[in-house]
Length: 478
Image 1 (cartoon, rainbow, N blue to C red):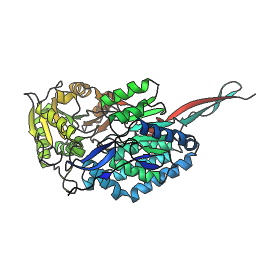
Image 2 (cartoon, rainbow, N blue to C red):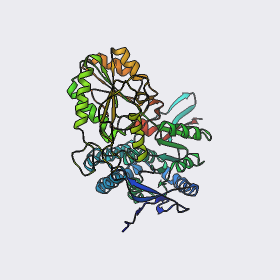
Image 3 (cartoon, one colour):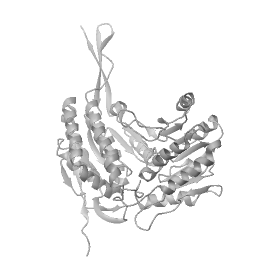
Image 4 (tube, rainbow, N blue to C red):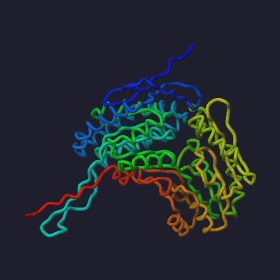
């Protein structure tokens, strides 16, 4: 007997719709490897419809007052809290994440972030009005940019959707959001919740694949394209957007260095770094997966980290003892396995290094030592539960290794020496530097990288301002 698959649909102009041509994609639960739903494979007609709806809704939404937009966002936050169990269930089916951790580590920050942007809507800052030329007064207006085309990733489908739509709506923009083709379920549920609160056309969801996302970015209507994804995808978006000079907001890959000095409390550092490296199966652009350890404590650290890895559990979402669930899809499992399978002869797998079970896409907590700076696994993003360890001799070499990659999103320094921590935080070429911790984020502080990790900020007033444009108005006093 065949179970009927759930049918997910686009949300365009205040209503749920199938793809115009009826095409669909199968959606797989990564914890089981089984197909549980179909999602629209949206084409040009669907993108056109969503953009038309967003453009039509923009003038009225733009002209709402900040306090009105604040009230709307606060209602969305309250609704997310009220329907948290439904959101968690959808996200767990999307990703296979542990239920308990999704409830404790994702819903509260998401709700807090929406409420932050609700407040930010009323606190746009600009230079004061004044007479900078005799007889003339200048003022600076901050305005929404218009329709925003947004593409969210599969590692945090719900939270990354919040990072995109909340500042955009708060600033007075309208949104066309595309979830990843592997994780549309929670975004479609969000559309149901948000659609009951905002005017039609203000928030739209278009499901589909890379071609769908490409059609959104290439569309002439959006004034801005925002993507969280791979470096390759970001480069393609930037190239496409350049053709009609769209604004681009890119949050791309990471390869965070975790620099551990000899005065560090090894046991405490290992505990925190293992959690920050394996959480969400290492599928986090800021994950603590590239550890640099002073040579004097290297062996002790590696042994302790390997032990921590052996004690870390991965498994099904309803198992309360697991730290993380499966990799998101079969291709990602293949990619992570490939990195480990191609390790050079001088590398040593201290723990893990293999798939777990034959159901779903689980991979063991893995620690690899003996690596060199130019090794593939050091230079490229694995995006899996794999922590590498390198040894360094002094502060200068630690910085050389830390900065010696093309990514520049996040980093951390572990030391009791305050002056050294300050020197390192200045010299590390990354958008975020944590000291004696790794991975906490707050709504008030910016998140975003340099180099091939992209540009633009998520969260904070800086992230909010990215969704605005500046206009100079000058008037004669005569």
